[in-house]
Image 1 (cartoon, rainbow, N blue to C red):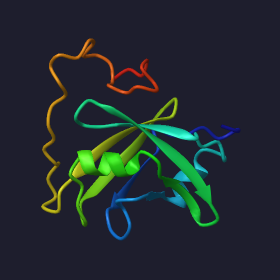
Image 2 (cartoon, rainbow, N blue to C red):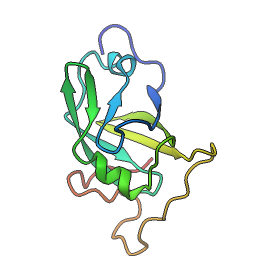
Image 3 (tube, rainbow, N blue to C red):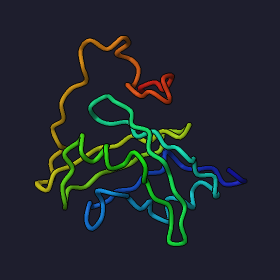
Image 4 (cartoon, rainbow, N blue to C red):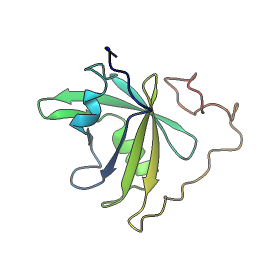
Length: 132
């Protein structure tokens, strides 16, 4: 990433307002940390243990999580004024934490117990993504 290396893992938070059920705008200052090398597909690692593939779309007014994002919103019961933190883990993977309007982390259903390998995310496109 050029001559300047990232200190720690870059992260951001978002309050879910407006049109958040269809897309989520990625903050411009977060994007700058990648020197323009943003993945086309991002893997969102949910607190439930699952991975969600979300398409990253570039437009004039910024980058957005778009395709796959509405499903992530529905499956996690995200509502207006909830907020989330997103931390970049490398290899197009982002760790997500979700919080309700009361400021507490949202309670999510646990992943299915009958999964083949509990150490891996349950994503179809990136079956090799590992949990840390």
